Length: 119
Image (cartoon, rainbow, N blue to C red; front, side, top):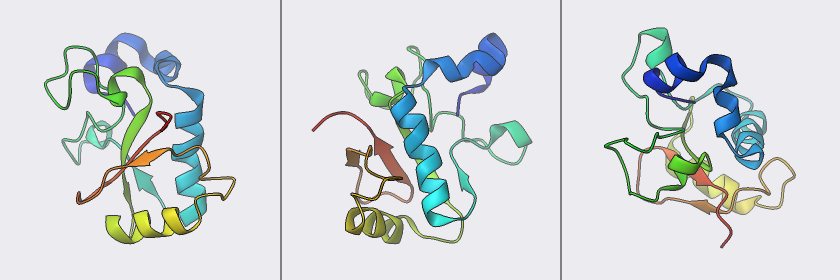
């Protein structure tokens, strides 16, 4: 959920950088779909995604005031389910207890962006 430098600095306490509603939402998406979900993949040496969860203030990716920079957004890949199908299912069941904290999603991207910014 964090980049290499943030994990190096914070270690396991990096969870403190996230809003608890976002953490519940990411876990809720995983539980709802019942398959592995990925945010960052740099940690296992098999990918270069490191800014799809928390983005530090100096992060070159995304908007200056991105919800990622306040620990309130994540870009998720859901194993075996394309992003558009996942977004449709989330919208169709948006009041489900596992999904109800998701406030916004980004469309027309190949991942599932969720955040908890009030609409």
